[in-house]
Amino acid sequence: MSVWAVLAAAGSGDRLGADRPKAFARLGDRPLLAESMERLDASGWIDAIVVAAPPGWEEPAILLAEELGCGKVSACVAGGATRGESVRLALAEIPADAAVVLVHDAARPVLDDAVVERVVTALTDGWDGAVPALPVADTVKRVDGERVIETLRRDELRAVQTPQAFLAQVLRDACQGDVSGASDCASLVEARGGRVKVVDGDPRLLKVTDAADLDRVAALL
Ligand code: CTP
Ligand code: MG
Image 1 (cartoon, rainbow, N blue to C red):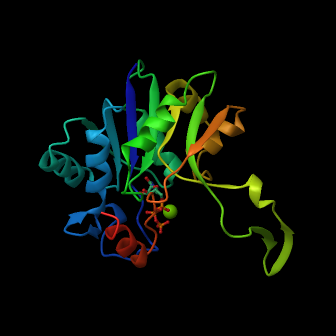
Image 2 (cartoon, helix red, strand yellow; image 1 turned 90 degrees about the vertical axis):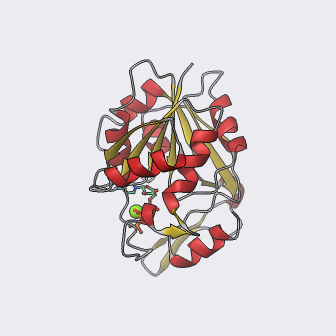
């Protein structure tokens, strides 16, 4: 069974506001992308990696892989205008005989291999996909502008992270239609009636959105 990883790194990082795309912003003395690339490459669960790089940054992404000795990186493609489009473009580089595709955001650098193991090994018993998730600590309300519409039952809510794992063909099918509005891949699979399993997430899988997040993540390394 071959497991391919898509590393979604093509975003511009508008909220981070660095002078370069977020994947190449500095985390310590390396580009942010280095951390997740190296960890996926070191994982015994992953056979090969396709990076969706910011358009124009494919070459630096390939050079980074070479510099880090990440021999599983098989291609770096230019990403698209949205995360979903970047994933679709990366999927096109994955051979037809791949069994499982794991999709991870470069914005979540502190990837522990135990999470990779949890999502990949969950794909038995008819599950189409698996996502790592954490309970929600805050009370979550649905709003319309300034007005609260309703308060959601917190025990039914989860905050979902990446990496997310899918049967390869299920993910390919899910990426056929309009993917532009999707903030994760599982939502595309769910929308087609796919069965997605929730496994334990990891609080260290913080997502780097703004500059303060970079400091928080650096403290975890
Ligand atoms: N991503 C991508 N292609 C895009 C947009 C996002 O591959 N067109 C990736 C990002 O590189 C990131 C992940 O999807 O690893 C989650 O996106 P987000 O945190 O929103 O990153 P950015 O879109 O880069 O940040 P911002 O929204 O602040 O511009
Ligand atoms: Mg974004």
